[in-house]
Every structure is written in structure tokens, then in C-alpha cells.
Length: 539
Image 1 (spheres, rainbow, N blue to C red):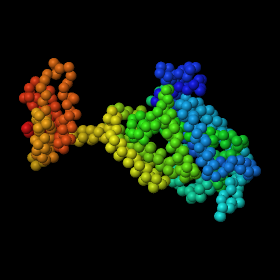
Image 2: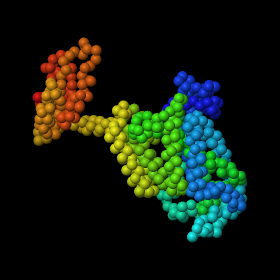
Image 3: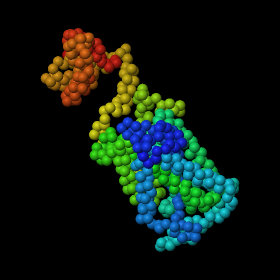
Image 4: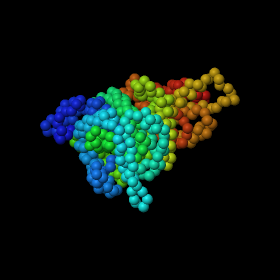
């Protein structure tokens, strides 16, 4: 993707590479900016903020300290709040990657400050009782709220929290299990592709994506482990299970926690929306799904795919109709697992095909890790939700069938052909002419065809005679390559292969250029064949 120009912000911020925007907003020749995002802004920040998206599931009660409602509640109001925030996120992403990078960096500062306050609070705050959110009772009534306990650092608290002890989710009423908890926690790891989704905006993608992703994953992993350890050491199980927003209750300054949670939610939404729009734009530009994705092809003069952003915004708006976050967690996780399994399967196919242009530099990469990734993703999909897993795999199969039927761009190449070549070559090398035996003999035919238009009956007759043997169609073009500007034989292969398809015969095609038919026939008889199977008769 070309980097965009935006007249709204004409300054540089912490490591964004390139030149600043001119005063008129143009970014160079044709209005396209020469600026590109650095590793930090383009990969580390989006990946970290996306992987912190798990805090979205730390619910926030819209009540004041006296129990009065601060904001109206209900399904309609929640949909309205979500739609307004989505509109804000969509507006930022529509204006381009430059504005998104700056907004992400400012959000990163807010989230870092909020995390720092939470970590300090675990040490600075003394033991206290924390009132729990009210829970709905029978007949629409509310149960008397209980209390959770922040005990400070206490070994007995840690010991009590070590067991599983799954309980009912107080927001949905569903009984939690390992699979449902995994589905929620897994959303904290889904930002790992955020940097790769922004590859078109990076100055040096081949270096920035692996380096930035590894740094972001290591940083996020450390923060998560630290938060899990501190929470289990200081908060009793009742507080952990019945108040998902307990960080605010134990914070030195609760508003900063709210700011961090909202900022992380917005940043995760921006990262997902702009990453999805770039992928959607690439799919539309390749014309994979025809008119369905036609609006996603629209770009601004500076190269910003705002049509794809609006398309993605509309799809997300439909998802907001589902309401509760835990309702979506399992489905979202299953679709992420399908995507990761597809990536692992692609790498596995390229590795098995021994593609010369696939040379991963990661030292721990092997086909074993790819296979383990595919198996792990499929296993967790069915553990989380067998219905959603089956439906997602069915949907992926239907999309694959649709793409196969439409016929993708031929310039892509097909990994299936690379796999077939690899396997055929391997088994041809195992054929040994010294081990031939008469009882396993089968005919190997070379049929010389002069006029293919009148040779269809002969082609089909030879196809019947071969009986599982090698069948080669040969043709001699008269000429001398030294006296010709180019090879006249190569352009003919497509027409001959079409003839094979039309005649419905199982044959290979071999063409040659020679001054005479006799010499050409001798050439074909000597060089035709695949490894050990060579023509044993000529017609």
C-alpha cells in the first residue's frame, strides 16, 4: 500500500521515518507521501496495544461511588455507545495510517501510565474490603451485593488461587470452563499479526515485522505474567470471579485505570480496523470476490484505502448487534484460530514443497513447528466451540471452492503444483532401470503428430494402447534457431496442452525445433520421457 498524505498533521513524532508533509499536504510526486512507519510505530506499538485488548473484558460499571447511574444502561444504550466509539475509530483510520500511528503512540503512553499505576497500587495499597457489583436475582430482582477482599501480598491467598475453581460468569450466567476461559484470554494474543497487516506502511517490512513482533510479544508476555502473579497473590477468589473491574477498586487513582481501559479498547479497535481494511483492500484489488468487494477498491489521491475502511466499519457495526462481549469471545477466537491455522498450513506447504524463494530466517522454524501449530489450532477450536469450529471450517472450504471455481490470478502460482513437483521428482529418482522386469512391463509411447486438427482419433487410440504407461505427444517444427530471432516452439505449448485437455487423453507434450523431421524425431526419441520411463516405441 502506498503511504498516505494527510494535511491534518504535518509534524513528525518519535521515530517515524521519512520527510514531513509539505504545507499543501502533498507527499511528493503524484500526491503520494514518501513517509514510512518505523519499526516502533508501525509494528511494536500496534502489536502491544492489540495484545492488551484483553482488558476489554475487564467490565466497567457505569455507576458512581454512591451507586447512582452515571450513564444510562441497557442493550440499546450499549449499542449506541459502541457505535459512537466505532465512529471515532473509523474516522481516525479513514484519515490514513499517519494519523493512526500518532493516535496509537499517544494511546500507548496512556496505557503505559495506567499500567504503571496499577502495578504501583498492588504494592502501595493496604488490605481492604471491596464491594462487588450487584447480581441479578430471580424475577428481575437484584441480590444483595457481597464483598471481595484485597489482602495485600499473602501466601495463603496465592495458595487458594492456584486451583481451577471455575464458577459462573456473573455477566452472562454461563458456567465457565477451561475452553471458555481460554477463548477470552486468547484474545490477548490476537494482535500478533498487527505489524504484518501494516506491511505496506513500513519502511523496511522484512526487518521491522519479525523484530517488532518479537519485541512486542516478549513485552506483553512479561506484563501479563506480572499482572497474573500480582492478582493471584493479593486478591481472593471471590473478588477475581465476581468483579472483572477490580483494578479500579484497588488503584491509587481509579480514573487512570478507566482511562487505560478505554484507551486500550480504542487502540485495539483501531489496530484491528485498519489492519482488516488493508487486507480487505488487497483482496478487492486482486478481484478475488468480484463485485462483492468492489467498494473496497476505492482509494484517496494519497493512496489511503478509505473505501476498505468504511467497508470494514460496516461489518464491525453488524457485529456490535451481538451485545455482550463473552457471547462473541468464542466465535472471535475460533475465527482467529482458523486464520492462524491457515498461516501455519501455508508455511508448512511451502516448506514441504522446498520452494526456493521461501527461506525463513527464524532459527527455530521447521515443518514440525508448523504442523504443531496447525494441530494445536484445530484442537483448541473444537474444544472451545465444536459448532463454531465446524461452521468456520465449512465457510473456509466454501470460500476456497469459490476461489478455485473463479480461478485466481495466474501470476500468483499454485503451491499445489510445487508440492506435486516435489513429490513426483522424489519418486522418479527412486525408479531404477536396473530393477525392471518383464512381468511389470508396460508400453511407453511416443506419438509424432504432424497435423493436430486431424489427429484426434489417433490420439485417443494411442491413449487406449498405453495401458497405464507413458504417453508422449511429439511434434517437430522445422527451422534453425540460429537464424531465428526467438524460439518459435515455446509459444506453442499452450495450444498443445489445450489439445490434450480437449481430447481427454493422459499424455505429456514434447516439442522440438529441427532442420528436418528425421532429425527432430531422433531428438524426441532420445530426450523424451520422465526419469526412468522412456518411450519404448514410436508411431
